[in-house]
Image (cartoon, rainbow, N blue to C red; front, side, top):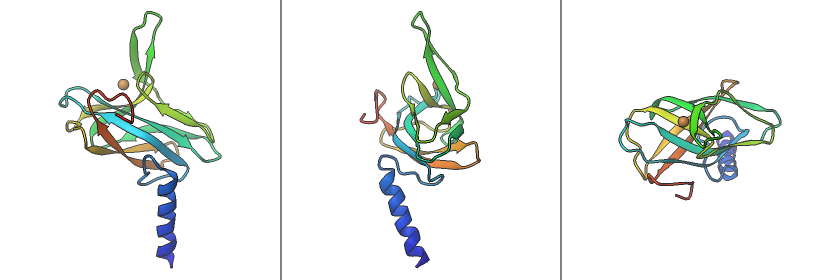
Amino acid sequence: MKNMIKNSLVTLVMAISFAVPVLAGSEDVVVEDAWSRASIGMSRPGAAYMTIRNTGDEAIILTGLRTDLAMMPEIHQTSTNAEGVSSMAPAGEIKIAAGGEVALEPGGLHAMLMRLQRPMTEGESFLLNLVFSDGSEVMIEVPILGIAARGPEG
Ligand SMILES: [Cu+2]
């Protein structure tokens, strides 16, 4: 009986987070449209993008990332100055308000995957853990699209 309840809960969670099934972690976090680009070898960092929604009634704070694909995964913010030159820097902690969402997308916030441990190959995917300030983690699977992909549809 206990097992049946657990199974239906799993089904429910999967049905709610339609785009990117959360494999483990906080029930208040929904991740949608996760994607990344294939890399040329391992000498340059990779990047991953997604939308993170907080369906809970309390703010949550994203403090970091963890993945075995990269030794130094970090959340970065790209900004463009008045001369049109863009640069990026660590974004620090990302607060997501109750009922709010934050978009990681090209030209803005992104998950920078520094010190790749293997090449990112189109058609494959990797596991990425989002780490929150309460110590909880949400594990998602990020598909690797083509090297010229500009969005989750490729
Ligand atoms: Cu970056």
